[in-house]
Length: 182
Image (cartoon, rainbow, N blue to C red; front, side, top):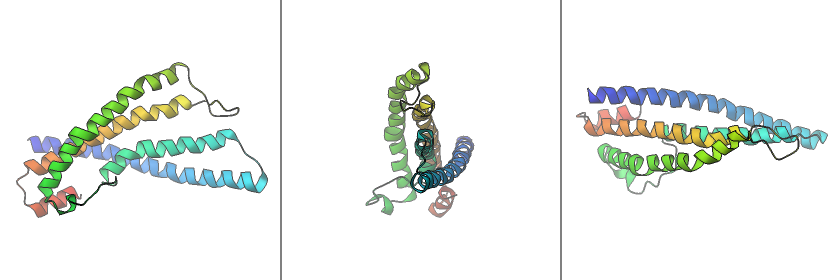
């Protein structure tokens, strides 16, 4: 029963993270095209707009802040695999479980906590760009700090559930490995 519940929770969070990752991938393409357009206008026609340049920064921040949870799900974050690569599936699950519980979630909670007043202050004054002709949405960009902490925490919970499934499962290691790589 517990394994079933953990599987459903993990699948739900993973679907949310996957959908976010797909949307972010399109933002990446849009950011690259916009950057190309800015360069052509700037160096080909000597035309430039602060708002357009700032929009690339907004896209960049959005891609990195909202793409972090997707990267975690895909196991794409940097890891020093000197010992880890030789561990069994269950030992890897134990390392990942403690890493999420003792490092990932506390850091996400800390980031949320220290960023909350900063973001709330930006919303209170509806912070705008200090540049003439800049975008009036600085408060939205700063909100990505809180959203990143939330999405990383959710994906961290999914990772905890996934690793608990591995540790509590009575399946053989080969079956576990197939389940983990799904």
